[in-house]
Amino acid sequence: MDLSNLKPAAGSVKNNSKRVGRGQGSGKGGTATRGHKGAKSRSGYSKKIGFEGGQMPLQRRVPKFGFKNINRKEYQGINLDTLQKLVDDGKIKDIADLDVFLNTRLAGKNDLVKILGRGELKAKLKVSAHKFTATAKAAIEAAGGEAVTL
Image 1 (tube, one colour):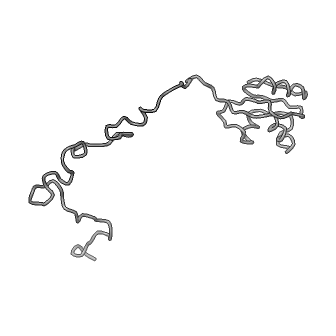
Image 2: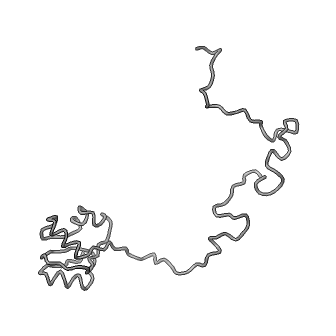
């Protein structure tokens, strides 16, 4: 191979189309294959997201209602029957805190945890969480445990 027989790699070059907008003699002058008038014929045209050709877009036709509370706190709920299952499986002994919930993947590291009252708890546990429902707190204390609010 030398400079006299260099060629680009097969399929890398696709330049067999005519150059448009370079005068009438080229066969693709005038409107340069863009048709006549309208936004698409202009330079710099880009369709906006959700544009429906001037028709009122769906996003604006659908009625809006309600509001989003920007101060809302999302809690990761954990039920008493889930805690009892962890005790039965031998995953927790006497303390159920954020580390336990993290290790058992019941909550993420940035989650706020709320203990909910579904099911029953037989084990005596010291449960640490951000919030407790009244029924959950009562059930934990009835089983001889302790509910610690963080």
